[in-house]
Image (cartoon, rainbow, N blue to C red):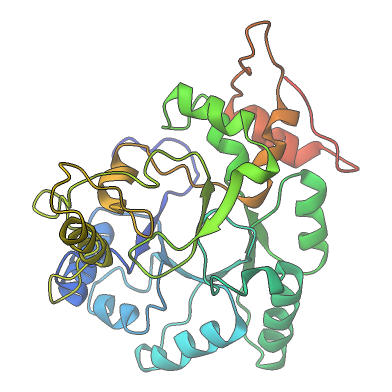
Length: 313
């Protein structure tokens, strides 16, 4: 926060699924440490966060910092509000994440494609109005152009959240060679699978090196998603395959992945549904590589593009 410049605000995502073998204690430390550091806002992510507000309510900045929640259904929002009502603190915003988003999804593996963001948005907006709750919503998932964003703003959203198009910018932390994989992806190269030990479906590029890897569980060094009993679904999958192939030096695990290791090593290439359109946002050189974009270029294209068009660099 000491490096902050200008009048903008700095927010963080705080994921409930980062349990670290002590779910409640870990979450409380992370939330309060962010408030201690002066963060402007916290978005509660990767979980229902039914008790998260109570973990912060004694902090002096609890009612000053902005706090929001990511949901994928009206029911999830209603549950969050009911369970946290005792704190007397409403969220300052609600991120409504649809089924076309990247990474973990708040839907079932078999039914995510039966939902759509516009319908979920409309249900939540109608309920908030009926309850006379003045909470802005931020639409997320599958918003690829400025025209997409405008449609949701016209429907009543206060803002939109976008990510996939920024994966191929200079400022993105992905290695440049991985960014080229995003550019080159076709629609059939994108999948929603169940390899995450969290239990949530994930959308990623099919060619992610972390799929079917031989990684030994690295919980001693990381252990980010160990539950209170020290359990992780990847450990079970790894031990099962080792037992089934006792003479193999390395075994491949396809149904789960060591998410802690592979996310750290940029080997799980999460992306939104429309990542296959990234090639249409840039120019390709004679060697087949795509020009990386600046975050400013992408941001301004969202601001000023019309009729579904995309500004090339």
